[in-house]
Length: 167
Image (cartoon, rainbow, N blue to C red; front, side, top):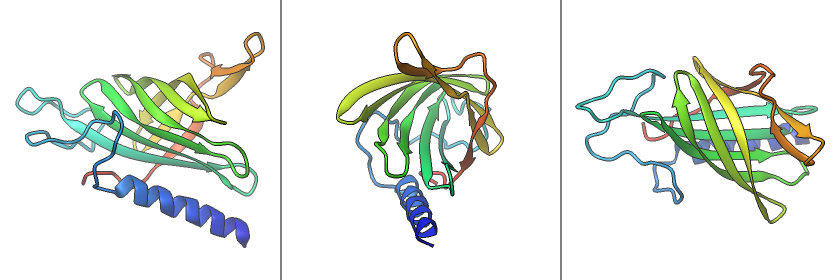
């Protein structure tokens, strides 16, 4: 019962945060007059101005599903910015910003995050697939002792679409 309450609380916070129309600090793009929000992954330009997509995704996993990762993406043309928060149950979280490039339906992004009071970065690979966001998994580099994207792996981590921001 307690685990359900925790998962429900995390999900509620994510939905509230992702659906907020208030101004957000950081480097995420905002919608300005004359730009059009897009819901489809391959949207055309409007009056030579790239359309802007704001998408939110959530992944819940772990034993009894207590861990969560939320991703908010703002896609403007081929530029991608956003937020990614990894919240493992009773462990140190990683919270930070995403910045990258979109080619077709794939996104190559750098995640700049804080964990245990330290700044760090990871290069991540994503793919938009309908209403899902897929990610290549991370693996431990035994030489450096750091996580890195497993470029040889397929996109096995699935995030499900949540509330879109700025509707």
